[in-house]
Amino acid sequence: MAANITILSGFNSPGHNFGNLPHGTAVLGIMLMVDNTIGGVGVAPAAKANVVSVIRGDNPNDNRPEAIADAARFLSAGDVMLLEMQVNDAENTQQWPVEVYDAEFEVIRAATAKGIVVVEPAGNGLLGDKEGLEGVNLDGKVIRPGDTAPGKAFLNRSSPDFRDSGAIIVAASTSTVPRKRVPWSNYGGRVDVHAWGQNITTASCISDGFSSCEDAYIQFDGTSGAAPIVAGAALSVQGMLAAKGKKKLSSTQMRDLIKIGGTKATDPSSGNIGVMPDLKALIDGGHLK
Image (cartoon, rainbow, N blue to C red; front, side, top):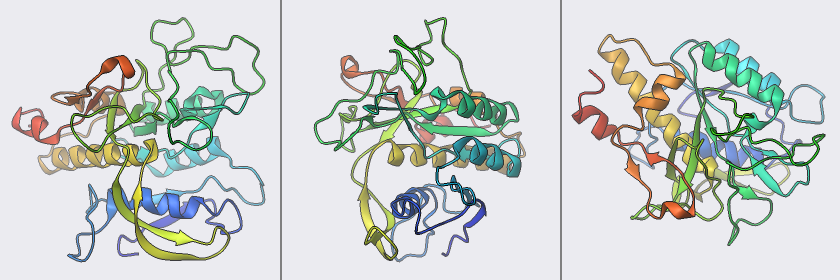
């Protein structure tokens, strides 16, 4: 409430997938919890944020491409768009970054071409309870609904199927050092960076699953928790550049910059998840002058 976040388009409907409400609140808390000396503080508490919902009118299904395109319409070059989405394969056994679907890829690419920084979760691997499960290797092939085997390797840089949306793809790592990939986080060469994907304290709400929600602090996890940490870091970089009268970065420029001086994950044999951004390294290294 104190962050003055509004829904620009779409609907916040308690009767439609009510679990989105506590999830979205937790994500926004990671980035934007205000510094009021009462509870936690978000990564970029002074940033201005709004929400575009995937719930569109009377459509019983979420419309991700329309929501992404609508969000891009409200944003300008240098703004940051966080996509809290993932999609299923044809067998509904694996969860992949949203851009493996064609329509979603096209609107993400249009957003980054406009200069918008897009941050996208790598996805949480296999469907079901995350405990003990393994993430998906994004270098492999995905069979999407309507596709035929063997599928395509859209996220493998060495594949002829590869396509680059320009988005920053984020995996999830442990909250303790040395940093390691959490078991359920996806991984692969297309993953740019990682951040905590467990034990994240944030603002949210405890719901009955249908209509009511009581304000609370919770422990949050998954690539859904890692991605807003990186989005907050990107907002901080843009703010520092703007304060110096510098031009804000595009998505691909930001993608390259936030890897500089980042913390590598240990045991790369368990899956490539890139580096954890280090804002102090960027500042001390003179990269934001």
